Length: 349
Figure 1 (spheres, helix red, strand yellow):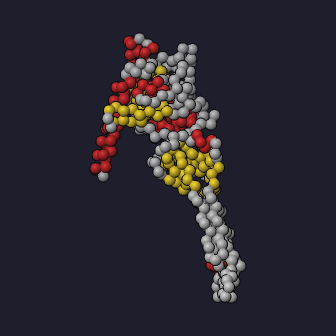
Figure 2 (tube, rainbow, N blue to C red):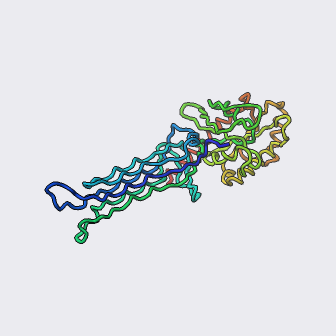
Figure 3 (cartoon, rainbow, N blue to C red):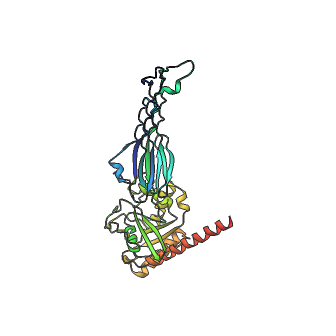
């Protein structure tokens, strides 16, 4: 399956126009000299971040982008017109990789950010430049330079404050529905989330944050298994991870204890990028509604003890929204503290 948050395109800048070989031929001017003009520069290719675009889906249908060629020079010292630049709009949060060198050449994180990805060729010189005391009638002009061409891979990394992660059917889509206005697909089978979903959690006026529901991860995700591998990079820009764990695995499914689920996901995070494990990560033991209250409390205590968990943890039921709002209030308080710390650091500096 070709997912829309990643695309590969070919960009080709315009060639420069050729210089002209021309001579002045006018009545009553018998000694007209060389007057061939220069060729116009070729158009360049730019990639620009646009907040009105949310996916890379359109690039599945168009793969080749070519800027305009510069016009050739003309007689009477007329310069060729330069080719128009080509601007390719992409979502905010798109990283650009040169496929030929595997080098990240830019990261467009703000609306209006622009990156030059292929420079247009310079126009050639007309013969008027080659006149000298020795060469009065030069028959020499230079061709325009070729525009740059390269293959680019574009990767969209969601700009979210909070990332939800966990196994398929851990309840992430239900959770984001419970705390925001997002409406991802919810069903009783794995991999219902095929694309990341963003939701805005508004705690009160002017106090909100963005939360992202990432497709479920399975063992081997960092090596390409399942769908979640395509989206592990989305977690890299989040500032807080909420790790959802199913306290009551699906009936008929493979029994994996909550602690084993946590360790399996931690292993995939470490394989993909060890920095992900260093991010603040809170444990959300979900689907408590499928157990008796005392049974859920006992199971939660066992999981926390088995993991030696030291970060915040919660027991919740996303489907009934029980326990979800206290988590959101704590998340907002967490970001408030981050802002205060950042402000103090700026004042100190």
